[in-house]
Length: 376
Image (cartoon, rainbow, N blue to C red; front, side, top):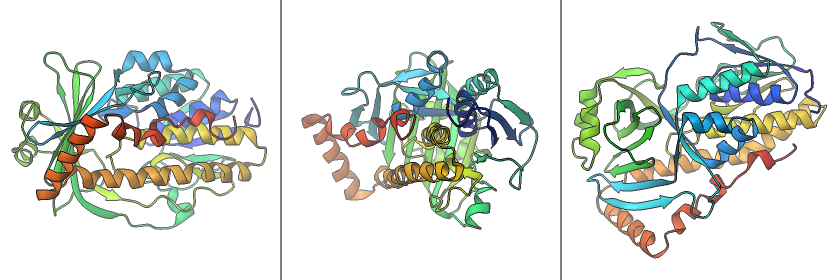
């Protein structure tokens, strides 16, 4: 332990980023309190993909065994056209065989993070809404996409609607499911699905449309609308959508990465600093990375202001690159007409003659080791 030993910290938000930050701070000796507006950490949300860069942090925090028990290990992402024909299969671990890519229900990850934090001495205060900066020597704003505390540092900001609306659903799995992510790419829309531990399948479907829904993923939708919007899709998609009984939808908005992440005692983390579109599966991963680097910087420097400046300098360029890459993926998934045919044909050729080329394009993302980044 270093300069965090016996220091007090308050984390606002008990999501994945907030709980990981609380655990990372407590592991280095800080006295941590987490404030959460929800009255309970209930079974909400759906599946998420945890890539190797994020898993390295959770392993370093002592969660490897619990993670493996609560998740499925995946090795590939398969891209298909909307009819269900394979375009490209990307092997995620061919040249990183020791790396772990996991599929997990968000609620199960929250549960194991909350238990580990409690075991480390973190105090969790539920049912407490926060709209101003708490009176504490260090405040970590992990209050999510609609962060109130981000405005304390950056003023009022207005995101813009991307012209895309997304559905999220869970269905029961019948039979055997291959533990990998499947992407089905159609004109102006795409669908992603993968299995989860416990016999569930996660579905996220995105459509370009002129109308829009409020931002946030908890708004109820009509399964019939989802089926109608993806009626032209083939392969296993019709069977999956026929099984949907409950669905939520939300409008996708583009936010800028925050220009200012901290003052001398308030610091942003996760979606509060860098909301991203869900097209690279890195929202939770970036927050997990942030948590480790923030704790490491604070532990290595007695000057809190200097530590927070170092944290921003280490994290801002990487998160901006990820946000931009996620936005580019949205365009690539939704190609239409001749561009779609040419793009898919090119991917098929690359997959045959250079199968490592496309996975290698993301080495900068998946091979990154936050545990080795910056101070320890």
